[in-house]
Length: 359
Image (cartoon, rainbow, N blue to C red; front, side, top):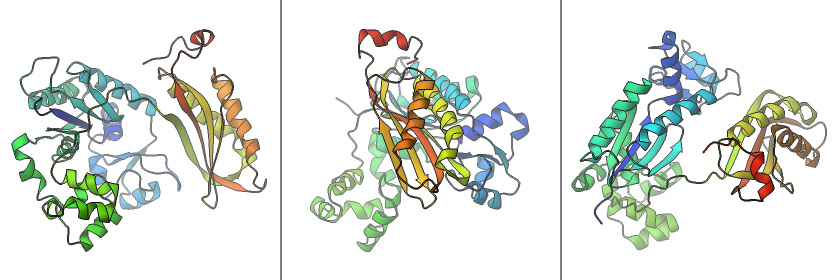
């Protein structure tokens, strides 16, 4: 079998771009997708906001200090999911081997494609153009012989770029890179490599496997392979959902007895999201974080899966009774989740409880 042809597609500043697309007054302005408040975090930032150093996952208060002119927009995940499904429909015209990583990025195996296009590069170019023409959004894409390299490539010419790593160009691309660009090399691993005199992939390649395994354990073999551009992982379509959850941080710490309105709202979000799954979740999870940042979780698996939003909410609320802390304990965060997903063939009587679930 010849080399795989993998495309990684990443929509540019997705949430912020959808907001700018749908509201012409936001175009060209620094847009931050986040709830305002001293405990909120940034979900996404437009490229205009990124010029000021605003990044996703940073505290919203810091984003506001970095970019006082920023326009804050509350996230609308229902709309983002709808747009993501439209992008997925474009992908399906070209291949069925699609592995979504999130709402805004996915791997596609186009070793064989449905449209008969002669190269993976042309497939990626066509997908980007269809996203632009039909959805008025931009996407960056990377094309390479494997997933690891394709993801690196898609980031190479962001935003709105296409970068291709041909099989005979892997070393020329990879060897000069800083080791921090490799997946899994964070601050701690990077510092450890630096102490060994390893700064680039070229340096890393000079270490033999036994040294890497001694220094980094099982991850040492992964480093050895990445330094050589090796990644045999396949594009896995329809990776089964492990859990669905939603959580929120309070503006001010609250007592457990005061969490009911938030739990009800989160349960509704989780129930709505679960309706899009082809499988049924059997376990309900309640997550709490105390004012001292201690995380508590309580879960319950009823005899039959929750069959309505009301039942899910009742179970989540009931789980509070299993929290043994003082009634005066205050909490900064609450979350509701569904896990333990199983096939729909639980029993014949369950089938008609979920007649409209979408795949």
